[in-house]
Amino acid sequence: MRKKQNLAALKEHAVKSLSWKTATRDDKAIAKEVHDTKSMDAVHGLTDITLVDELFYFMRDDLGLLDKWESIQPSSIERALIPFHYYLMVYLLKIVYGICYLEPVSDVLFKNEGLMKLVGFNAYQIENGSCKRGKKRIKNGESSTPICVDSLGDNIVKMSSQTVESLFNGSIRSLAAVGTFGKRITGIIDTSLLPTTKTFSGCGKTVREKEIWSLKDKKVITVLEEIYGFKVAVMMCSKSKIPIAVKFGKIEEADNSFTMKLIEQAKKNLEGYAAIGKIMIDRGFLDGEDLWRLNDQGIQFVVPAKKHMEIVKDAYTITGMKDKEHVFYGERMEKVRVKEGDNKSKMIEGKTSAIGVSGLMSYDAYGPEGHDKKKHSKEFIPNPINAVWVTAWAKRPNQKAGKGPVYLTNMSVEKPLTVVDDYDDRSLIENGIFRTGKQDWHLKHPPKKTAHAFKIHVYLTIMMIALTTAFREFKIKEEEKEKKGIETGIERYRRKIVAENMDKVIVFIGCLYGIFYAYELSILLGGSVKDCEKIMGPDYKKIILQKYDLPPP
Image 1 (cartoon, rainbow, N blue to C red):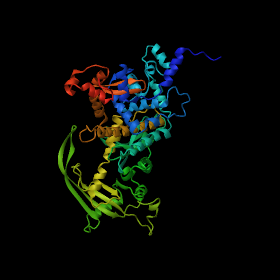
Image 2 (cartoon, rainbow, N blue to C red):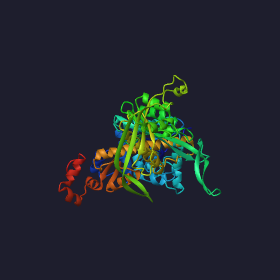
Image 3 (cartoon, rainbow, N blue to C red):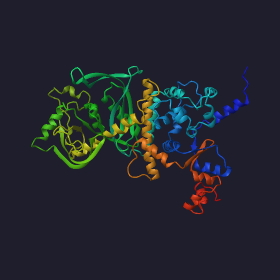
């Protein structure tokens, strides 16, 4: 016999069924409704809400991402009480707000009614929860939340690897489509370790040398240390500071195993909108076959050589020879900031100089696959490659003469300092992605202690670094209020957003919302504001109403 439904249950079902829609901003529609009816569903002070309001607008209207994300539904979720993209949006908010663990999400996000309505939860769900367990918590004296943090962690890890990779790659492609990267980019590639405990499910293991002070020997000794965890590899656009490709692996995987994977993925993400012109990579990625592939694809590269390599000795020898047909010099004086100790720094003037050598023939591994296997044969013909030796560096005044790095490149070395400057940008990825990612974005804190959960967290975190970086630039261009330079540091940006919106409010009516200055809301409700009359003149009401296409008073 079918169970009889009561009216309360039907109303509850209707509220849930009709309100599963992410809130949409429409200032003029909200203004008209407030002006005509003098009523609204909710109004909140606009401080932290704005942090995601305009970000949502950017992701939805300019990039077209939110509509695509609404269709995500992991096959492992058999019975969906709420759409999966709600979990996704809340988790992305957790990342943007810099919340390290899941537990604080309840207090920081779930109890912010305005923010939860912006995500899409209605007032009923915020007050009663989205399931029977929400009501049970209320009966037990606990505060209600639209979803529980355990549910958030359990569901977010149900995304497949293919889905989370598509999320990231699709976001980068959307950024490329609106011209974020220009037509030709310089890419920077690097990796970073993500250490874990030994018991972390699916982690890898590597052994590294570590210097410690020995009490027994009373000196510094080198010991072997086992490190467990994972490794993230990223390719970043040098100009925009935005990551454009990501790969995730175990901690023992070699850096050069990621090189071509990152480049091929970046090319797919940029295809039709931008092309890779140059690649800057660290010596850990040094691989002759990979460099040859880049050269074959028309991509310029710069990579430091290892000190023991024969080509380094040749570069030193040729730069000291009298025959200078293939040797080029570059030198300049420049002012740089150097560390002085105790977190202090000072400006100094120093010399930077470099010597370029073209056509070196002593890097046997530089060639197609299997090329160096014939290096002992009389028929072996090595491929020429260029080198730049940094003989003096202003920002490293203590560098010993003749001890500077040697860069291998397929670029012209007639102006060797150009090669040095290009490679100097490689440090941007260490500070802008990895250091900031670990400190401010909590890259090392996944929702579950599994390899799959860590991968999902890494991809989503770096995706939000990319989107918020692009968003900050978008705001600069749209508002034309910023001073020269790009706002750096997520913490500084959060403070700036709060300061800019202290006098704004967000108004909800149904599934729409609008953002107004507090004095504008007063006028829409039929009030008067004397300060506005002093600043804007006697017609201030008419001016404000015209802004929202409303008739004069």
